[in-house]
Image 1 (cartoon, rainbow, N blue to C red):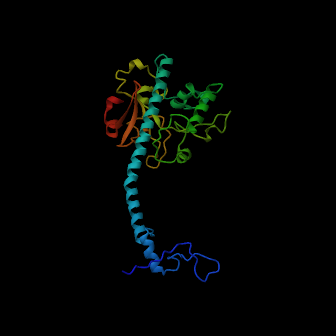
Image 2 (cartoon, helix red, strand yellow; image 1 turned 90 degrees about the horizontal axis):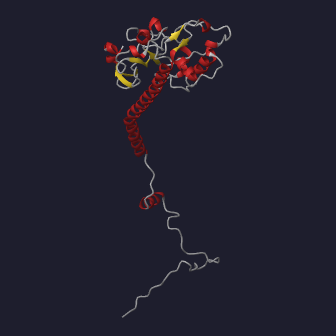
Image 3 (cartoon, rainbow, N blue to C red; image 1 turned 90 degrees about the vertical axis):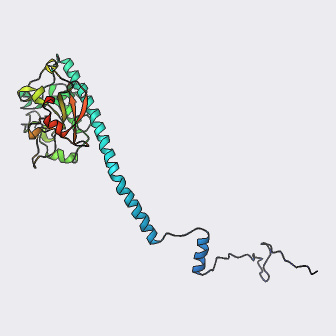
Length: 289
């Protein structure tokens, strides 16, 4: 029987005729034609995307983004709504603290103290000047300190749900209550108006056009009666109103603003709790006013 002859090749075997003893093993892909190299690349699982495949992936991403954007927007609205409710609760706690410190009288809507100009003091900056933000040496300085804190966004006086940039409100909203005459001691006092968007139900709680106040004991249904709520700061029929410190369902210059999801407005009841009311309820339920 003839024995089959075999020869074992080793990688280290020198190539005949090479003086340097270089290995005879060569890269089998080094000089393959382009098509062959592509087939080998496919065999190893490495392949570039085609233009059509990239376009398909981009279109899928675009569709998914379009589906997610409304959900993200709704999530942001809900977050702003929750923050607004939290701020209104803090605000009402401060109002009730004022009431407790002032023989059960609620804070008035404004004052005509001539030492500070007609309509100078509106309720919310004044409230803040008395509790937490008044660091001035006198009434005027404390009130001005509170105003600056509101302008800096350092207080709970501005609802986070706003339709326009703050710079637009800064440029267009007049001071609360209308036009003021600058104080002689501070001629630039009104160059930076202070705006906020929580208004008081002044007809019920601050008679005489907001100049007086009532005692909490005369409010028979405090859990249902609106003390304050989301006020309007956006222009109405192209006109900017300076009465954002009030809400009044019968006066378009101070309408409550249903700016939260579902056309609802967050309102503060006289007993201190906060709830969201639909626009229709705000304008038809007279028992709340």
